[in-house]
Amino acid sequence: MRYLRSAYLAASFFVLLKPSPQSRITGAPTSLARSAKPIVVHVIAHEYAFEAPEAARAGLVTFDFENRGEKDHELLVGLLRPGMGASDIVAAHQKGLGFRKLQDAYLDGAAPGVLFATPHTRSPATFTLPFVAGRTYVLLCQLRDSVGATQHAAMGMFRFMHATR
Ligand SMILES: [Cu+2]
Image (cartoon, rainbow, N blue to C red; front, top):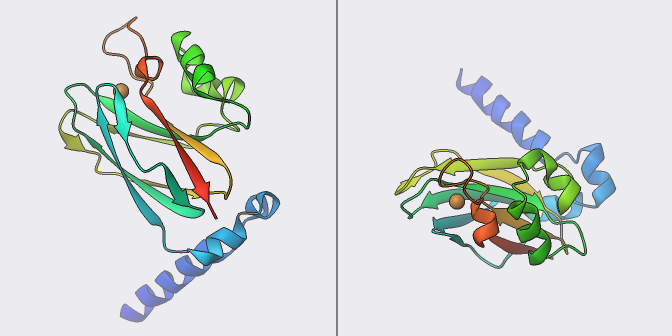
């Protein structure tokens, strides 16, 4: 049984290191090979802002999420489309854009993941994203305090993180 477990772990590790056809196109495998162990980034939510590092090294980045606010918050992380900036994000969320439409507005591709945390809790889940060197990622919260209220991102609840080499 112990042998099987080790074999399984070894196989998982191999799969993690093996570049997918998709990452071969984006040039991510070099970065992934350099730091196969994910960097852990702690993100803290308040009303209406995030505390997070400004940058992380390219490779696997694991997000964990704590809400120190009095409202529910989420952490959605997406790849920013080159040329897009803060005003594009605010404009999109003032229109109440949902996560399916973010790639039409300012994300480069679909939103890959989100974590939720109620007030004064830490999400029991984390998610891991491959950061591509030289690209910018956006951390945001689309939640509203009530039906019809403004999305938190339109109130400034977003933040950029750069992937360094
Ligand atoms: Cu929020």
